[in-house]
Amino acid sequence: MSKRDYYEVLGVSKSDDEKAIKKAYRRLAMKYHPDRNPDDEEAAEKFREATEAYDVLTSSDKRAAYDQYGHAGVDGQAGYGGGGFGGGAGGFGDIFGDVFGDIFGGGGGRQHDPNAPQRGSDLRYRLDLNLEEAVHGTTVSIKVPTLVECDSCDGTGSADNSKPVTCSTCGGHGQVRMQQGFFSVQQTCPSCHGRGSEIKNPCRKCHGEGRVQEQKTLSVKIPPGVDTGDRIRLTGEGEAGANGGPAGDLYVQVSVRQHNIFERDGRDLYCEVPVSFVDAALGGELEVPTLDGRVKLKIPAETQTGKLFRLRGKGVKPVRGGAQGDLLCRVLVETPVNLTERQKELLREFQDSMEDTQGHHSPKKNSWFDSVKKFFEEFKN
Image (cartoon, rainbow, N blue to C red):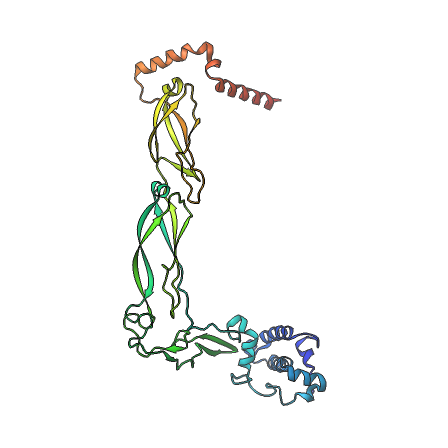
């Protein structure tokens, strides 16, 4: 039976490049492979035909011969005319690894040298601070679990300081190939874990890894003005590197706990100051807290709830520089509770004394009621 044109088999044109040919073959291979179509002779024949076409059209020499002489120029060169799909040289395993290697790791490409010096991993440590520590700065001691260089073998992993030998399982490649059905899968060598070499007499302390798990204590200087989300980098305090590589870094992540008096907003601090009914009406002087001690705050007469008083320079000095913030005290007029009968009587007398001049003493109240009255009149209309 005469063979079909290879370009027709793959559904490509003579001008298509190798990338287009590979894409076309991948589609047909996934569709017609015998593992997906058991006992289907037609699918098996289409798969064999597509594989033979792919082998010829992705080889520059074979493709040139085919383009010039047709099937006569490549008969006997295509590796899949009557053969199986084994993993030998030029077999299906190699083609499949080439076509599907970008998905399953079976392709060529550059391999990472597992024995090259590798930088250690960076670590992150969350540090909780109170507001005073964050604003004024402090020095804290932290304990960090990490991998450090084994002091027994000086990081070599060998008990007698001998050099590693080539891994007998992977032959020094660090990878082994396994055939699973029509998949050719490349995996990390289970014996040497990708290093390509083995230590015959491993260190007993680190078991040949060159690093051991330890908990080290570090002193961390916290600069004044840090806030939640700020990071402090400690160079070289992360995990030890492998194969003589440098250590990683440790990042201390700052988290400032909520304060029971102050609320921070950038460089400014806020606090609520309860003021008695009498002090708000007549005025007075109060002691208010700051992070540097107590200060006097003068409350003018007729102060209303929500009034903000700014104490300049009593906020936070930003860690990245700039002017120090302010402390803003928000007045909260407190209604008296647990009144005696006499005190209630005095308040009633006080209320009666203002009946004729209510608008003069409570301008906001009257303005609000006027707005409500206007709203309902407009609503009715």
